[in-house]
Image (cartoon, rainbow, N blue to C red; front, side):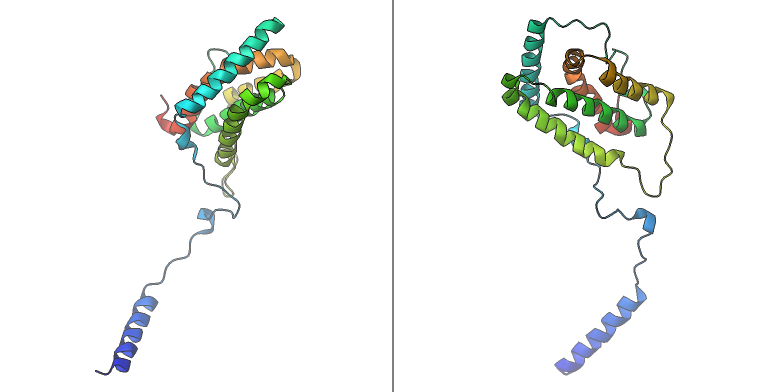
Length: 197
């Protein structure tokens, strides 16, 4: 067989195979929006030791500052019973997002210039986690929005109300005392999905 005839036979064979195996189009509901990000929160099951060390340093500095201010608060914003495992799996990211948002807001509003360098790394880390969490809480285009459970509604209301009623110093106390629970327990719970224990 001449080389040109061999190529023609190969092209005909290839055309027959390709027309016999058409790929089905991807259903519209399964496609991602062009600007949608994947939810990769599982990477935050545990933070590196150097990150936790930066948070410990910031927490110690804030607590030292609050001691000098002699802050007295009547209530606890994050009670001991606050545990994300009590929420439905799909509601946990939303609760953590609200907790992170408040924490970021309070830490960013601290005006003490000596805290700036100490808070830099923790604020960057919290902002990074918060941005990834936003991708996990975006409603899916085809999904019906679910009303939040009574417990989640109460928690979200409590966080919102605290911002309006609590003094900045008391918010600092609450956020600082809750910092490691947020990083180690709450974040790990959301990152573990239905494996949260």
